[in-house]
Image: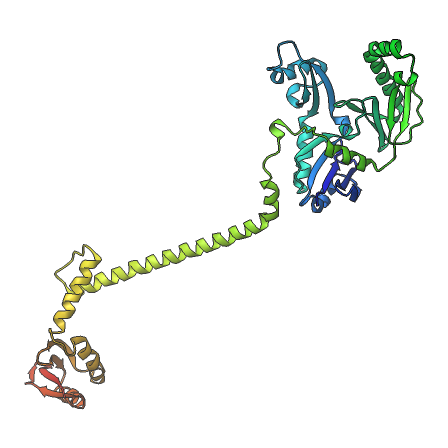
Length: 421
């Protein structure tokens, strides 16, 4: 369903703001209301989602002008325009946003708005979470009648549209003077055509009358006018229908609407930010884990090099880790004695508990003979009985052959040969 949110912005931030949600397909008002000030604009964000938003500008803040294009200057007119209108304006043109609404060979229809007000309106909408692609002077949303002007009362003021790109806002007390001026201008511009029609077709008072199409009750009597009371309806509904039919848009130049991705960004912003935070935490944890593993790897390498240098005291240089591994494997094979039986490490692991039972015996060296599958221990102790105790412990599991024991000063030295039973 195609629905549109139309917001009439205020001239001052504290002024009320009218709004309407209109369905052109069903010719139906979905919702409407009035905000006390611009501070309440955020309450309309719920209506702006999934709907096209158009903003009506108060015509008291928009100057609509008809500008003559100098002869031969059609191509350069856009760059010349600020200098052409500068003398008629009370402000520096650098402070003004000037938009060409329509251009022919001789005449250009122009809208002029202060940059300060354009920026304030856009900032108010952005802060409220409302995205719009259209700014339109409210008087140009009134119905356009070729035979005169359309007018409607709005917030104790009158909005008038008297040509396709011209209109004005007037206080109640100034309305008669404005209408008199419009009638006089219309009479001057059409008097030649009217005289010709009169000579050909006869006098017709209605054809000379300037028609006022009023969409609100109006008791003002203006000479040389014909007053038509149009069917009354909600003012915002009338403006909404006209805004959707109009192609006028003062959001141009630096205010030109950007891609609609910003609107979708608002919808997904929280999800994307949350996902981003999760990814940041995940990456941080991953980096911390990698650093931890790298530190552990460095520690393992340092320990491996320390063991390598203990095993090979004469080799201090370790060019690569593959070199370290190959040297350690070669040494392991050498210690295994080249046999398919138990290796030295197996013997040592089995021997360790027995040595722990007799700690007085200190192991001096080991010699493993893989072919004979025997292990020769060179040890020392403070006295002979400790050798006997160790031999006794080992005899339960192995065949033990104790060699000659020699005493040197206060230490006893001897050899023990161990075989599998």
